[in-house]
Every structure is written in C-alpha cells, then in structure tokens.
Length: 247
Image (cartoon, rainbow, N blue to C red):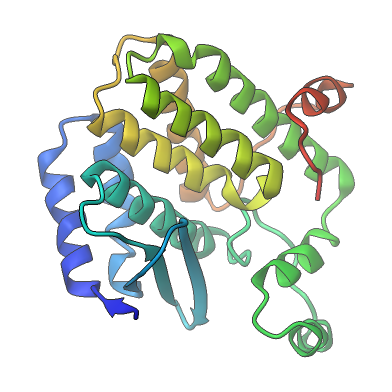
C-alpha cells in the first residue's frame, strides 16, 4: 500500500541541506530544493528504485521503494536522484532527457499517447528521434567515457566495499539501460552516497565525480549542454566493453 510521505520527505531533504558540509552537495541541494515543492513523494512497498512522473504544469509525482530500516544514505540518495529528474525537466523541457530536444507536434504527441498510454520512455524515444544523430552520439560518448573513468577510479574512493559494489551497479546498469535519461540523476545519487558514506575527498574518484556533477549543474543552469568534439571510435571501443545499448 502506497504511503504519501511528501511533508516528511521534503523535511528530510531540507535537514540534509543544513547538515552537509560538502560544497558540491550544498550547491546541488540548493538547486533541487528550488523544485522540491513541485513534487509529491510517495513511498511504496517492495524492492527497486524510484520513478518520477511529469504531471504537467510544473508538477511531478515521485515514488520510490521504501522499507523500514532503510539506510539513511540510500533513502536520501534515491530522493536526490529523482528530484534531479525534476530539475532536468524544468531546465530543458525535455521529458526528463538530459539535454534539450525538439518538441513533438500536437499530432505526434497524441499518436504516442494513444499507442502506449503512460509510457514516458516512448515520448522520450520519439523526441530523441528528432535529434541529430551526431549530437546523440557525442552525448553518449561523453557519458560512457565519464562512467568508465569513475569505474576505473572507484577503488581510490575510500568507500566500503559494499558501497563500491552498489556504485558500480548503479553506473553500469543505468548506463546500459537509459544513458540519455539517467546521467544527471545517477551522478546526484552517487554524490549523495559519497558524501554520507565517507568518501575520501582527496581521491581521484571524488575529484572526477564532483567535476561531473558541477558540469551537469552548469548545463542545467544554462538551459543546454555543451559537448566536446566527438572522438572517432570512442563509443565502439568503450561501449563494447561495458555492453552499452544505444537508444
């Protein structure tokens, strides 16, 4: 049975923003708390992650799996992750894709709604289809390269082995499934884990992670992303190693 926990979850996020001393988390939460009143939070029984639905007119519904005794770092990380999707959509008006994409016509939008009602991913794929392939490929190259860097540097993080395993799974599983949708949210999720679970702030992993989080926040503030020139063959070399599925 779902439990509406909006007031409690908003308070937990505000408490975390006052508690943390990490400047990158402070900046991120400063952005996200500007959107927190747009979202209703709902805790659901069972296992799994979270989900954010765009209700229109700047309103959102965030639901996530919650169990009694859930670690505080996991609880906060999933809320920060899902609220990042809200920030992304407010920045780019993109059906929660991590960069600005062309709008569908009214007829195209109705067609997608009628074919698969309620499937946000189908709207995302329809809009991605209108993005120049070189831009899509350049974004995937950047994300895959950044994920590989984090995976390579993760052993330097000073985090406990079980948290490192969770981070590795979060990076690879989300990347494999939906790189266009999950990049910003996963960065926020991993940063929250790193802050609350005691990452070494001087480590290569933490320096890289915070640089990526800051870049994504800068892009959202600007309302669009700035991609480097694509390096030929990068996706082929790295994507095959990670078994990434391009969408």
